[in-house]
Image (cartoon, rainbow, N blue to C red; front, side, top):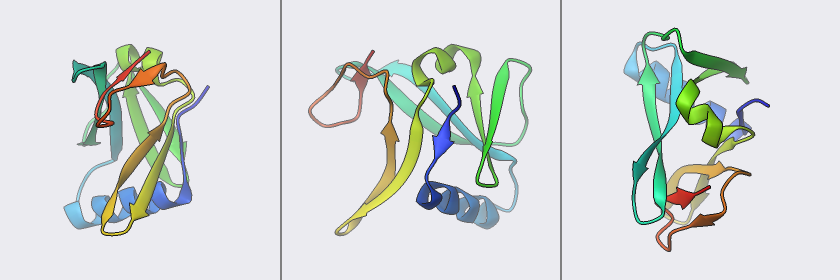
Length: 107
């Protein structure tokens, strides 16, 4: 199952890449962190590694390393605006619980 993006997320990533002036896509990963155990990592990608899986969604490449893929299968990346706040939201069907602040999760 692939990693997907909403139109809003794809548009935001494209604009970041244009402003940055380089990059082939966005890396989505997880790391051990936070009070619930894991947190999401987003970073620009300039070079794809051998162990990476690449998904193209709405003209944007999403790159996921094989270890993170175990926790991200079926995840949808969204970009939301609520009042003065905006940011990426992860709709991950594998999540069992999240911490109160929303910064980390458990599978």
